Length: 214
Image (cartoon, rainbow, N blue to C red; front, side, top):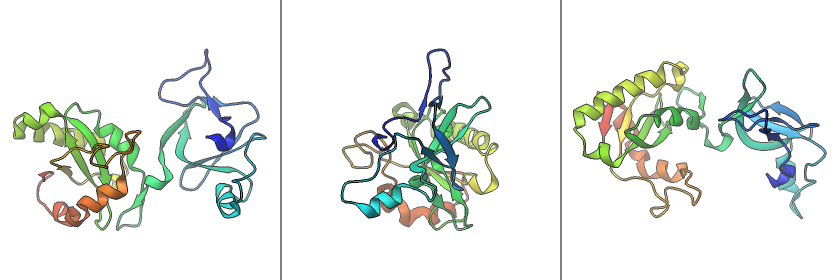
């Protein structure tokens, strides 16, 4: 972030851990919000946005820590792991907030899943929209379903009850920059994806199948 002059965490040459952004640089103070947001404070923080006092006020908390917008946690050795973005969280009908990105990554460890997007607006439990890989889309459906049921069960074992994915929905069309479902940096445009499929969430959720094909 330019707002903190890129002074936060770093993986050093002799202190490096894959999958993390490293340890705090000297003088950096860090705290976490109730939603898990990483907040940082150091002498290098910017003073504010030019002629934008309201945006400047929103950038800091009451103690002068900068809102990074990232959700994360330290591992047992003090390396910071980024697990998602605050703006990507959503609330199910049960009133629980869910950070979808870490769960999506676990699902995408399966070789038949190309893309995954967890949604839950208007339904009691989250479901996950899935785009299959090109080869998987041509394979036997029963075989693919059996593999996905196994992956779903394995992922759910490590989640809290309210986070567990109720169904996997296989959608017909992949998400690309060209169809405006991905940003130029290949991040999901969750609001557009929800707008496209949202009217079907309850129908899919009420299905008696764990794997639903669009």
